[in-house]
Amino acid sequence: MEVMHQAERGLFELQRGRPIFVTTADSAVLIAAVEGLEPRVLSCLKRLGHSDPRLVVTGYRVAAMKWAPTNGDGAGGPDERGSRIEDGGAHVRIGLNGSSSPEEILRLSSAAGNHAPHDVRLSPATEAEAAGVELARVGRLLPAVVSVSVERDSCPPRSGWSAGDSRLAVSADEIRSITSPTSTRVRYVSGARVPLEQAEDARVMLFREGNGLFEHVAVVLGDLDSWSDAVPVRLHSACITGDLLGSLRCDCGEQLRRSLETFARVGCGVLLYLAHEGRSIGLANKLRAYAIQEEGLDTVDADCALGFGPDERGYEAAAGILRHLGIDRIRLLTNNPDKVRAMEVNGIRVDARTPLHGSLNAHNLPYVSAKARRAGHWLEEMLSGSRKDR
Image (tube, rainbow, N blue to C red):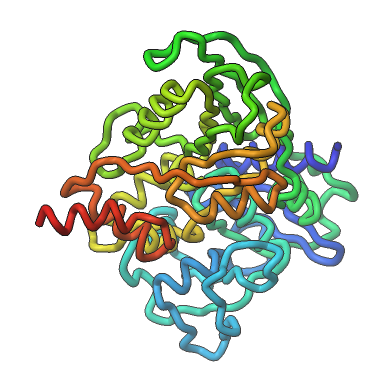
């Protein structure tokens, strides 16, 4: 368990703008997250490193920007699967000009359009650098780090705080302990009856992932113990802009309310409110993606331009919550084929699927169309109504 604790401490450091060592058996790097990078931290990397600073990004970012090597240091053609450490070699590092500022590095990591230097130098990321990117990604920072090589012997002999200063060392293996989907476990924390507009007998239960990073909520309507059929279930990704603010850019808020109305009508149901904001890239990156979409990219390409995959969500935690509730057969309210497959893979039988549509408007039509066209969501009926209206 201590291994996982060490990786979590490393993520805590990155989220606060502090550099950390990432080590393998025979190499080490000192990295800092691009998000929140300060001049003093960049200066620290330059002072302590035995190499020029490098920007390490995912293959998704490189593919989205259509960057290609121009000086023979090719990355071997990173593919569009991009960002998982298990893919091996999918992360890419870019040589930085010695005078690059934090603002310039942030643009190179996240802005749409070709912001690469004239003589972009691409090469495969090392195992330690790739692990650093994954640690940033799982913490919902921009999946990009600045890296310098350091002597392996200058790091602590075991994972921990380096002697004489406050920099932490974490191994690539330790980072895998919290970035691997198999590490997703949930435990019940608390619950209470919370009367809702749709059902006064509703119960709300909170679950926390084993690594402590994310919390998910189960909203239970009706008596599960007496329900003999497949339980109606909605896997709902948290959407602050849609669920809370009523954003017109998506139909999430309507889907949330219609799920609860459906459960109240049939007498039973479970809504899992999952910490998957922005398809699990987090609110900050979701807002960055919205800004990029204003430049003409659709929702999938905008996420990839930031270095994320088309959909970063995993449903292992959702399946674990359903098992805790004693549910192994469900009727899933969804338009997303990935959710159906994920439940089946994780041992939850999907007996039936019920479509769940919101309302189309001029603001969410591009989003809904992209989900159908790019991700294969079952939205033809919803979109056909829009075409008839036009």
